[in-house]
Image (cartoon, rainbow, N blue to C red):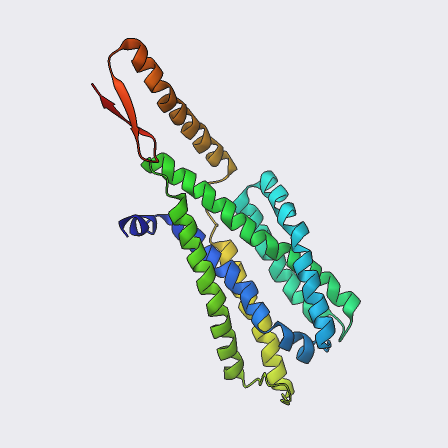
Length: 261
């Protein structure tokens, strides 16, 4: 528990956890009321709405490597900020899709799926970078604990999205029952809920990295220092064996040498 508490006092760890929570909660919010929005507001059949969702999912196979490519060009945190911004803009364009037009609906859904797929890729990559930073500064490997924390925030967001969205629908008076008749005001409330919730959370997730210092240049420096330190530890037994002055025993996963004379 001390290790977890120590991690939670680090600014970059708090950034990544809040960002992970938000970029998971945003699409999760959208997914929870997706079918209501596309059938009630945008006039799609359930069959067509599901087909659009399939497009959203499939384009993620293109979006994930595309986001990784972008991260190599502008740094990981900036790539995440770009994808969160474009995802939010894409959500707004859904309101311009003609009622029941599958062709026009497929375009923003394809882009949305591509951008959303980049969220998880960047969060995991940024987590690994922060793990390297922690190992350099503290001499201790804690990447497993970091991933455990991000997995926890992902699960919390998944459960929270359902809890929040259905309470919001209840507050605006929208009925999700199959035979329910909702007024134009209630449908408008559904539209606002569908757009505002995901946009808010996703944009907060991207904003977590405003002022972030662990960019690609700094991470490259950290990796160089770690490799130099690891190489020094690797060479220590050979040098000491030649001099006959000490025997070195490595203890634990951090590979710190304990010298016995």
